[in-house]
Image 1 (cartoon, rainbow, N blue to C red):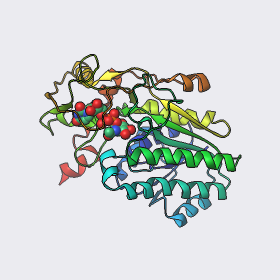
Image 2: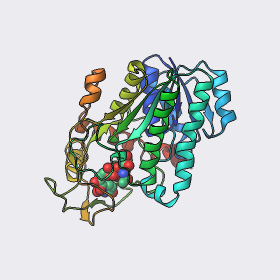
Image 3: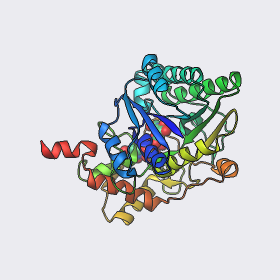
Image 4: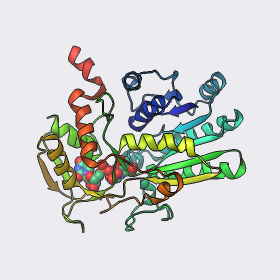
Length: 342
Ligand code: UD1
């Protein structure tokens, strides 16, 4: 297949490009590099041993850009990652989030329909379940997003579902990921957030490499085994694999699937797993809870297993080892070489 990957230079996008290339697909990327580096795509070519077919730099809301992409390539399917994704920022600039995340999706759908492209895999998030206490979480749990980022993902899911109802030729799936972490096993690709990382894994990696003094563990008094929040961490290459399989298994109409392992790990459990697997200690300290965190989020991954026979294959030690592999080779992320030669 020839697959258009929007946001293909981002964390999950770049790993998915490698997965697609390794399985013989042609890959076209559109990315505006607002929160990603062009270097990620050079690394994709290197890791996969063959290059992406074409790269277009620009904003998906630019209809003439998308028109050009669809006119130049015989696209069979689209994987739509491009979006803004920081929860706190989405509360500060909600209109930008709706504009970028939602408008881009409607422009993309319109252009796909105009060009007879009828397969879409959409990057959604477990954050649409909101402040739930259900463990594990199945897809039938009602959506109750609590911030503009999560609401933008939920709106997009609904827009895509409506489009599938109206245009029966359109087939789409939304994948709701739990907590993607890790990196490509080569160490060439990984997570490289701009500024201070919001998420625990990239923050912990920057502590491990000595860029930050300690990890603050947000809250030690939750009703969990050790008092710290529990999450379902999933290896980014399993997430990438899930997208490739989604393209191959895509049914008719619209569907949603959780992507998770079904295994919960506490923040202290994650620290311990890293220390044991990588032999590096992580100075850490328990501090106040972070507003908005739920004690426990764990996927029920049985629906996707039943539908596609798909399940994750990489365990927590592999996740932390691969994340560390990327961090060690790229202590300052993709800009490391530029910094070293400056
Ligand atoms: C976050 C997003 C979620 C998104 C997901 C993608 C928020 C509120 N939610 O989920 O929308 O889909 O990332 O991976 O941002 N923690 C620390 N110290 C830190 C950072 C985090 O203890 O420096 C803790 C948090 O309190 C939480 C756990 O680590 O219990 C995981 O946090 P994080 O990596 O930010 O992911 P989520 O909040 O689960």
